Amino acid sequence: MPRLKARIRRKLRRKREPRLIEVYEKRLIEALKVFRIPLFMLHTALTVGTIGYMLLSGGDFINSFYMTVITIGTIGYGEVVAGSDTLVGRVFTSFLALMGIGVFTTSVTVIVRIFFKEDIINLYRAIKMLREIENLEGHYIICGYDKTSAWLAGTLRKRGIAFVVVESNPEALKYLQEHNIKYFIIEEPYKRSVLVSAGIKRASGMIVNLGEDTKNIAVIVTARLLRPSRDDFYIYSFASTDGTAEKLEELGANKAFVPSKLLATRIAAYIFHTGSAFISDLFDRIAFGEETDIDILELRVEPGSPLIGRKLKDIDLRRALKVTIIAIRKPDGYLDVTVSGETTIEEEDTLIIFGQPRNLRRAQRILLEETHRLTEGKL
Amino acid sequence: MRYKKIVTDFFILMALTTNISFITSPNPYELVITVATNLAATILKIGEGRVLSTEMLASSLVADLHLIPALFLFFADDPQEAIGLAQGALAANIISVIISIIETILSAFTEEE
Image 1 (cartoon, helix red, strand yellow):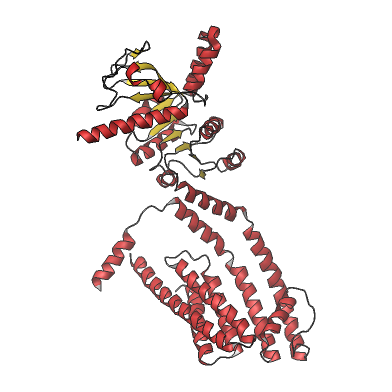
Image 2 (cartoon, one colour):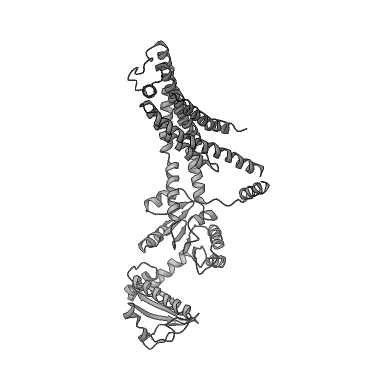
């Protein structure tokens, strides 16, 4: 017995941070608590009325209940219960009507008002959404919702990439609903429980755009504690200056962007290529993921890959997988843009492949599977 | 002493005792009081955010769903079936009381902490 007591104590002592869904469920239960008083009042009025009329009529439940309902519901069809037309019956009906009508109308009004209160409906929706987020995998988390995030969300949606928006400002809710954002959480994104609920442990990456560097730092640090590997989980952040961008990258971001610099660079690119506007625009759109029909993929030639030592004309990816190798980046960073059929693929090379997204994904899958199969075979 | 707990526990126990008394000596007043106390217990359990509150609410709803049809059957000249349903409700009410006791013990442990 003392051992059992100790075990129960240990279990109760082991406090863990509650999941966001649990917090919301608790809030919903708390919100439902307000139903109790009006329901209890209504229940008491109905019980007193029914038992009273039953005593008057000698146990006629159905009619007694009906008489109570029509009395306190201000319908008043008449004295349908035996004994209600007596002196005692009329005194009882008078008291029941005086008390019951007030109770009935108040209770019904309160119940209807509570039921349609925004809080309860929003909480219910939030719980439902969190349950759906639990099933997401390989998605992205967008922290902060402004115009840039809205554009980003639109682009990701166009590509069929699932994402969850985390925004602390409740006023953003109407914009999120207007923009048909499927999954969003209105909470502070630097909280561990919020990031866990956004599915950080199953996500592919995260975009941090909170408008302030300090807030961005807090989110990046929390996210990196949950997902330490930079190769498995990508964090892209916004920064106000080059210096901050460096710090954010040191703290855990894979890449930090300075929006004004990025915009200036892009405009400059147009200025430099005024003569070939279509091509520069096309490359630009591909690089920025706006061109959905064509894409570029980087594929690293891992040790043990079947491509090592083979010439491009031999593997003929153009015919076999409908993709083209347009350049090869060497391990020392040199970019070979003059690849031909005679070019030989070496270990640790990075192939720059051009093609339709569907074919690129297929090529990536097949080549990776092949490498995996060969490496496993050797082992 | 928590007054809210006194009221809730009063109705939970009252639901059980009136249920037993209806089964032992079936009469319309007993049945109506049983239903009333059961419904009151259910209402009081709504929104309770304690450890076993969901189980408590579920067991109470089970008892209600047995007793309300029993009430109509009893007055529709099928008292035998009504008693059968009340026996089913009794099982749910016993479970409700047991859960209430377990929860009291658990909360006592938490308070000690």
